[in-house]
Image 1: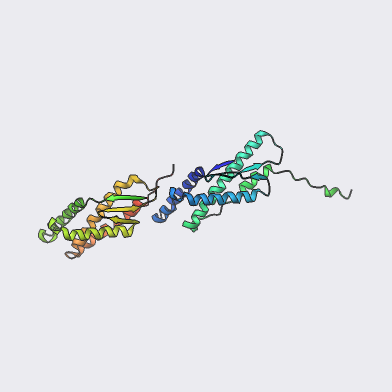
Image 2: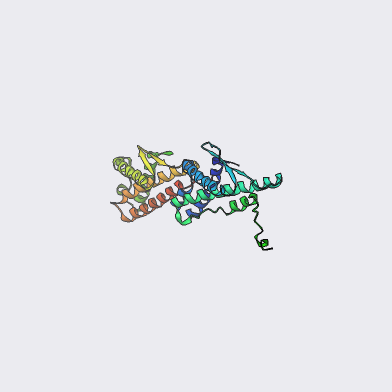
Length: 151
Length: 133
């Protein structure tokens, strides 16, 4: 799954633009400050890297995952399914994981930005969806039938 | 990025002549109230002062008769004309208010209030951002 930082940044900018428009009703200067521009991209790139590191740090416990040496503006995450599944299901789940990671990275960056600009509106990003979809490709847990041990 | 607005000083002074002449006509005392090109040295001082007021209320610096606004790249450049007009209107009102300050307190207050509201308008224009595409 390849993530292009500049594409993610478009989404993030759109989010913070809308938040800024809301804030402008009460405080135009603060609202304008929240609306990120191209000059803010380097800071957001750092936030995106942090967010991907968080994802990798959490996923590594559940799945086989590799992060190839990436360029400055993109990251690639490989989540290897441990369970046998057909191509269709795998593609579907891959799509779900891809979008849940994108959503998390965007939410994380918006939250970090708001903590700097307007902490009142900041809301921590959740990894709930990533866990949910990754668990679908996790290996099945085989337990010993301990309840039969006495027989 | 820097966005340069060059003020048409003559247009500003023409406005000042018009505002002050109107006040002179209303007060039936043209010679006292109406500013003329003979008063340009005084008006120049008020003009410079007005540029300073804009600069201190916004993120900008002054370069001769121009104002260099420090705006982010997502500032809506379509509003450049509005910004220029607002700056000229502000300067016209500010100079008029300063001109009236020693002549008539009511006229001073009216022009001062108007110039203050134009500063708010200038800030509002500078706070507009383009929607990301």
